[in-house]
Length: 400
Image (cartoon, rainbow, N blue to C red):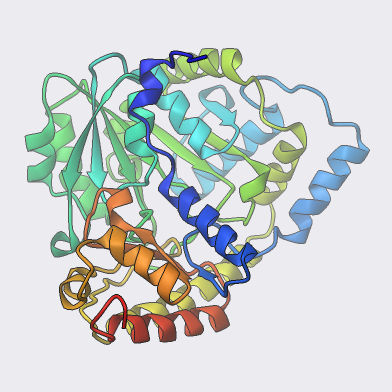
């Protein structure tokens, strides 16, 4: 018996990052020695004071439904965070707590995007952005920014991409997959373009905000351009900065009009996020951030090691990042040098099958000719991985 599936499903692609993780697990189950550098997940444990807050919530019986948009305690903690770290003023009524930042992004798209509306997605992009736009019946418009422009979209590119159908601009800094961050000056230049197009809303995906080590303080577009406050939705969460990926807490902060729409959507789709996870998130946001600073320092050290090793040759070029835990090397030179390899997808397959290093092809991020490497793993494994990559890329052949 054949069942007709909805049209919205037919155009969707499976997550490339999850596919790499699944292939890594499959090969490991076969007894293969695989170094998995595909997952976007901190390898640290959730800090103890956060876990203790969850245990206390269980003991106190905080195991019931909460308000659909989140507990008052967490929404107040989010507002304190936004004021303290970002200098942004929001009321708890402007915050919606969701089941991870991915859920938050879906809320944004469903609230703002309708059939045929265009959504500008700078590439390299997080793999899910274009398909999430399609789920909202929108049209993803890709702006490509390669290593030559530092993986940053220029004002000229943004201006050229905006049409009367443009409804939303997706922004992500620090970036997944590049780790590159926009500076305050970058935001100001993009803001000049956006002021000429008042109908265009902005989604600022700040999920990697805390994993940041540049000398210039972190900023997002609202911090640099306060007049864009009403048009911008801040998207964030606790997954990356606090090593809480499995706790599934994301949130948005936006104007009352946009927030009201997202509350209605979430109320009909999922209702509230986990009550216990919300209690833990309060402890994360309000607690001591020494543990976060310690994690960031380790990520920075790994970044320095990986980027230096990638830039030693073999047709590979890698920019330094300012945050997140990814390297995004340009491997076009390596592809040209290897017999039997024609693109980044084939190269990624060759590396996992041939030398046991799992990376994600850049094509999945809208950037053919690149690979994403996650250094959210121990230095010992990173050293082994770099040695294996050096050997594989210097062989001159996919069978060498």
